[in-house]
Image: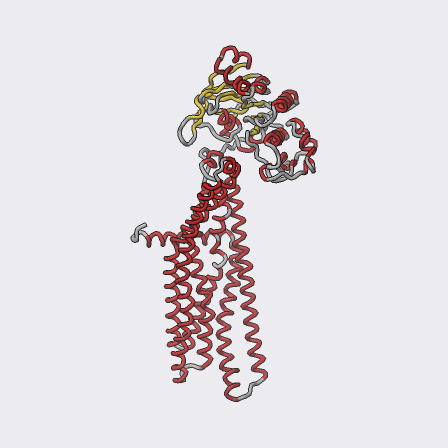
Length: 592
């Protein structure tokens, strides 16, 4: 950024930052109002304490030194005034801090919920274009950074009240002393502004660096198995080290600015007090002011030093707040490429019928994964989808359950275009089980129900149909056994069977298995599929498969080739008339 562009950049940061603070106040006005009330009480008590100290000096301390005696009533009155102001000051601090943190942490919770809700509503196509670390940062670190200046904001409002009251006290005391004191306030403000102009850019880079470090760390930890099996620990450590060192350099740059400006800001009130003492000595000698007036003004500036720095703290944190909010806002403003449907027809009894009408789908790189596929799946039948790697099988599976929307054509469920149906209408009728099963760090039962109110009998029946009941019963606490993160305590086949039970317990009208038994022993897989055929499920079943034994159980086979529908028919028919199909389905056996 050129020097000519920097003032405009700084104005934008300040303007955006103040807008974020205004939005925070609108979101939680009640705790903010309470915090400002406490801050105003604190400001009034702070100025009052300086006034009281000056009064005590003139009416109690100075007469005691002059006369060698003091009235008990004067001591009691002075003590009562000081204690009363101290209590008011403490009460203001308690109210301000309690309400300010109520506001800050309430904003954290509110916007974390909003980010999480938005992330769960956005389609998989949006998630694929972003790293998990970036999304985690938006839901946590960026939300915290956005509202970091909120806690000192009420104190800043109190500082403005304090400055007005302090200015009144100065002018009421003596014009020359007021002139010295009023010169300090613009000086402190000027130093604050210079400080924030200098710290703004490194602070902005530091906040971006925090997000980058979080992204790299999450990616490395999430891919720990790949990193270890391929011996890439050193390379991942180097990559993380580079991000960490960039963040370190940015934070050191912020520290250098603070090391220069903070001593200056601490010194200015002390210099002002020295100037007040010098000018005050002359004014006392001239009889224009009393000793108590000098004590009052000097003590007032001692008390003003910390609150005035709070204003600088907010200005310093604005760049970090703006960067955090822009990252959060990108998530909150994100919308699906196509609007969600609203239709919610009552589900029909029995299996679903599915029709594909010239379905085409292309990913962001523009290469078509599926081209002009038209086919009908009769309700209640089991269909196997077969094809070489990259032929579009998994893409088709995602389209069938609405995880992605076709870029051309229609996916029709019981006569309704999926794009016109509300998400809840699809998820209650269709379910998909993917090759890589995800399990939560909770009990077996909770992993099957996902919080839905299924009975114990339904859970056990689904597990039995998925051939999972045997190993579940052998676990230390059966269905109450808590699994490790991602189900790390189970084998791949066991995880797949629990994921299948999770789908079956919902009795979907359309069940899509995307290579969902690839890690299961072939004999167990056959038992699962035969059980699905014999069970009284209201399901049309679509299986993405490569094992011949699996394919043979299907009523019909659909063959994909480079994103196109190459052929369809029974397994026996395709074996005799499509040599490429015969080579494909026997490849696994030949390899064994």
